[in-house]
Image (cartoon, rainbow, N blue to C red; front, side, top):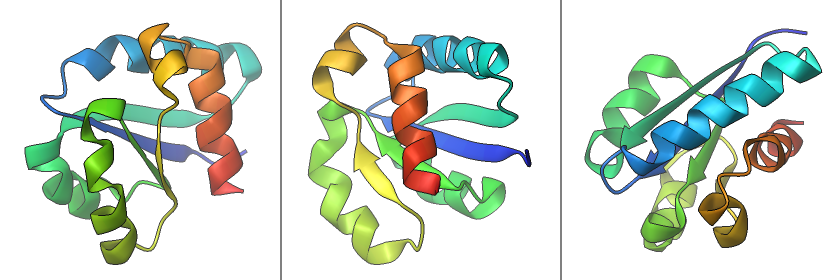
Length: 102
């Protein structure tokens, strides 16, 4: 399977870093070749240009940015389920991201 690039965006890029770790662990367990990273909302445009993600997942705290991103980017964009985010459910968020790429 070719590498998938999953970008997570939150207010400061900090709260999603734990979720990234859990998603990477889930990807390894499933044999999914994925590059998963988090960035701040302020740095999102730069990362979109430099890293060319396959999917963009927004933290619930920046869900207000969904429509703006959907208008500007040609990749799937979705808000991470609030419960999955709060529970740091890496496997579930990974599955959601992968389902958006397909």
